[in-house]
Image 1 (tube, rainbow, N blue to C red):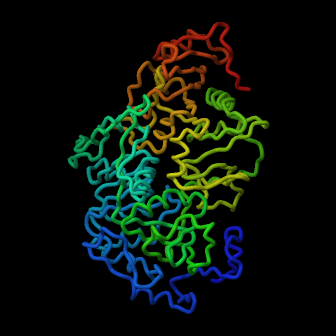
Image 2 (tube, helix red, strand yellow; image 1 turned 180 degrees about the vertical axis):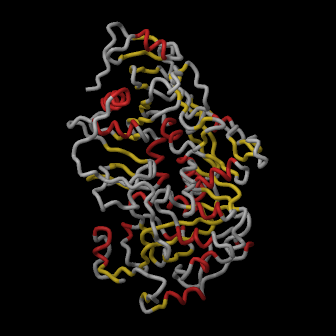
Image 3 (tube, rainbow, N blue to C red; image 1 turned 90 degrees about the vertical axis):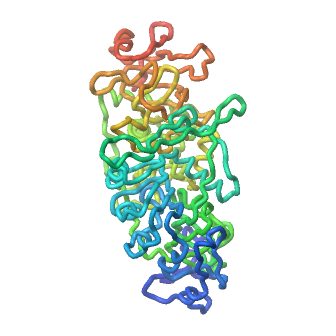
Length: 545
């Protein structure tokens, strides 16, 4: 298929050139050269040559098939970086090739990727084929087979904060052997003890635990040292590539793909469209071909949508009553006009339905988006635009897309005004527990540790005041492993609003600053597992109208 280049992505290409979309059924020629002929000039690498980037005799990096591109660059025990977030922007063609039974070199692999995908697709095929020894990810996701293998002792899993994964990849490409981050400091992540491998005897006992990480203090604050992740092979998905490996991504399918590309000693990219060198304007290229060794056409390009969300067609929003409705309406009062905000899944996201008309905020998604819009209209959803919950989204005017490393730079650098998220437990000194119940729930921390570890961002937590059995969720000390230590500024429950002196400027602790209608201070004390002060009576009522 050939179409005018000016039609692609808003017409950024030079109008005198054409964009070529290649298929496996045709032989496309660029400047009169048969691209399939490049297979004969592509250099095959032996295992002894893995320390350097692959080179070709031709100036083109195009290789006809995934099998040829992967030939002699995968060996038992290889370390891989794989792009994608959920099912967005995953290199399907390359993963399918590695999962083949006759690709015997692909075994005992260590794979780093933001998430673990789903059963029977993408990374899921590699797990099911028994080709992965260790997975480095921030979130297990909805992959039931992966979860069974992990708890059954068949798979090692190194749960790592999402932003740290992206930063470790970026650091490898930037020549930085290590770096310091506030993410996870003071938690089980930095102290050590997260299960990596369970015993295979079904006892549920842990065989390998994560070790303690090195910490160091800078300007009165502790930071965790993280080492760069140097991949033997990086597998990347792009929207457009030219024959020199310059890449253009689309929407949130960019995610960690640029970071993966930088981390690889050898980097292979599969692209939906491939153009000759010179077609792409330098200003529209998202990643230079200097990081890329081989380019293939994305022959397998199903691009599944994990969670399709569309507008219902009814302009009115459903009215949510009860305690959770009160929490959402009160939480919406936290948004200030012009702020940059990250909202967690559940009540925080739903609170955005109650933002006053005169307040305009920009919503941030960890997977690489600023300016999230409404859900798409029916039939207009795109797999290239998803939020951190893997739901389909649109973007507002003035929105922007970027890589995962850039996204978490915004977070760690304190450039977001507000982070709002849910919790399993919170404590009187501002500790947050939200990602693990030992022996029961181990999904991963996702991006939460990064979000709450940012030094200058306000952190607001929304949660039911008590669990279903009536036990308190607001405690003097959290009993579950922490997501962040002394990170919460404000807690909003169905019974009231608490402010936390997390920096211990006034002696520490928490203060009840608003109370729900029909609730007394004695009611709150009876339902709370922590001591708290109150503002001068009468305590203001929660403003949830």
